[in-house]
Amino acid sequence: MWNVLLDTLPEEWNGYPIDSDFQTGIQISQCLSDDELSETERFFTAVNLLFPDEKHRPEIMEAAEGLKWFLNEYHHDNNCDEKADVIVMDFDIDQWRIYAAFRNQYHIDLNTEQMHWFVFMGLLANLDECSFTNVMNIRQKKITGKMSQEERQSIMKAKRVFEIKQKEEPLSEQEKQRIEEFMKYVNVSK
Image (tube, rainbow, N blue to C red; front, top):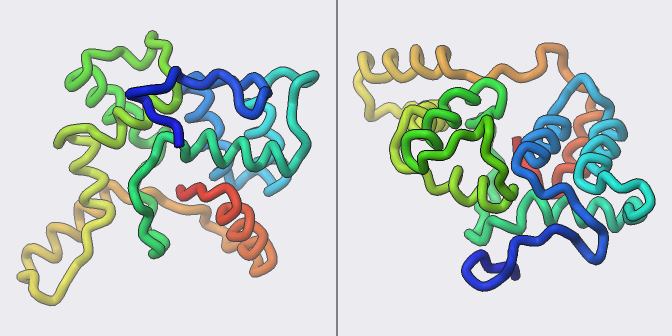
C-alpha cells in the first residue's frame, strides 16, 4: 500500500512511466464514462493517457491493472458493496464548484497548478463543507416517508436542478454487461 506520509509520489507503475498529472486523471475518468466511445475506445484512450510513451507501455492485462491502480491507489477507506444508483459527481458539470472549493480551502488555482493525481483526489475527498460537497449531498440524499411533504418537494426540486443526466438512449443488455464487467475490473464508479 502506498502512503503519502512515507512514500514519494509515483511517476511510474511496475517500471512503466506514467503521466501522473491530476488533469490526466480527470481525462481518464471522463473517457471511461464517455458514452460516445465504445468500451474498447474508452479503455485504450485511458491506457494511452496514463502510459503516454508508446515504447514503454504494458501489455493489455497489465495496463488494465495499472489503470485500476492509478485510479484507486490514493483511496484506502473500505468501500461499500452497494453500487450507487445516482451519479454524485461529474468533472464537467461540477468544474466550477471543484475549482472554487480548491481556491477557497487550499488556495490552489487548479487552472495553473501542477499536481499529482493522488494528491488531487486526496484533497478532493477531504474538502470541508462547500457548494461542491453540498451539491453531492443533494444528489445522493434519500427521500423518506418521515419527511414532510414540503421537505420532500424541496429536496426533489434541488435534485432536479443538480441531477447529472445519464445517456438518453438505453444500452443493450450485452453492452451493459460488458461495461459492468469492465468497470468491476478497474473498480471505477462514475
